[in-house]
Image (cartoon, rainbow, N blue to C red; front, side, top):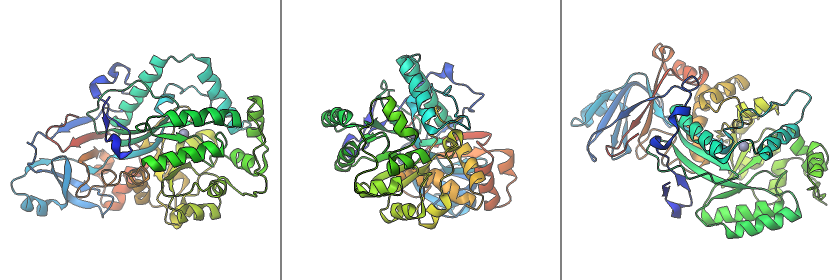
Length: 456
Ligand SMILES: [Zn+2]
């Protein structure tokens, strides 16, 4: 394992392709990408030309180019202009499209082996799904070795599907996955929870003993006391870590916080963890975001994941406090919890990120599929906006927009090159983005590394 920038507050683990269990890789699910190595000596300029360049932060360029030096993007623009500007550069021609790597802003790699968690039937609740998942986890049928192996396999799949950056949430720090030389970068958050006073005491003690290099976060308002959430948020703010929280995923969660009733109350009672803390005495709240606002947790360092059951006032609250949002449309569809009000979020100036969540609550963890589901769920939202969510939205949510999410001078040079017969037939930028967001993973996908010393 290589821990990078521990002082920066981000716990970044780089994994090595050679440490990944390739024999377990299923090519039927994900096509392995071809890797293009830029063997130019460091400090020399490389120029990659393509029929289409999609910078995200600026308009699509037909017959465009990206100039790279020392692992960073130097310039993005018209191919003929950059060729004359960098006349000495080594030139590589690509087919199809150049775009930034995708960002998966919510995943649980440690649940990759739980793809047999039953999908709730129409008469089952969100709590029934949690019961089923906990039963599987507590049965101990999946060994630690299998958990790590599945997590590594999933990571390889993420890389092969064009993901450059992941926000991974886990209850365990998995065996260190060794140094990575692929374009995938992981920001790992250790997730803690505790629903009652007894658990709170134990979790607060654990928080006090965590080394600063470990980023820690809370699970959800229904599973974690206000005291634990406040302590973890305070710690995250002090260390400059992201504070990610599952928020308003189901109507059952809203019901618990508002009335202290519903399936979550039954669930907590079953586990001997109900101590009557909802509804909060003297506090009349309408929703989960309002509850978080009341606790003073809303700010730009809070990443609210799901946000399905939020009303207009709550979206406004999130926007006013500059909170980050991550939508998980595939997981929401799998669990039947509803559709997040994306149009309202965009109307209030929010740019949500996209996450896949885990194999316990999704059919596959494929951001191309997530974009397609968003297109289906929100036909009035422009495809360009959805592609921006999958790239820049994720980078902003993770505080990494200086490196990821766009093709712009100064960004890291992990370029994604994709192609397919449909993309080749695109007549204009609009058609191109429509295909990129509506057709699933392109047939051909490869990474371009911009540093002569890097191996990918
Ligand atoms: Zn999750």
